[in-house]
Length: 122
Image (cartoon, rainbow, N blue to C red; front, side, top):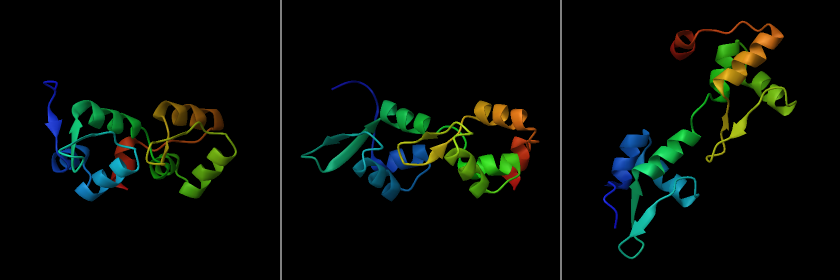
């Protein structure tokens, strides 16, 4: 066994900012990798498991892109559907956008972007 720290579901939920139920759900769905011990009943996670999960969730959500561009989420979905705005699907089936891609898209189309602070307070 390695010297790498191991985390319980409760500890992982705190580190990820999710409820323990959501941590278990993402684990069952295969989105969050884990190691099972004690006859398969207890679940433990390594820091690497948690870091990989968090990295996959990086980027902007549809709602954040909409607020940033001053449009509705439906308009963002339309841009994605028409392949106008680069997007990727996270392991938990959420659309994620790279901020640099959004800025480039907006600049090319003359869309005035709202500041990050404004989006967070909205």
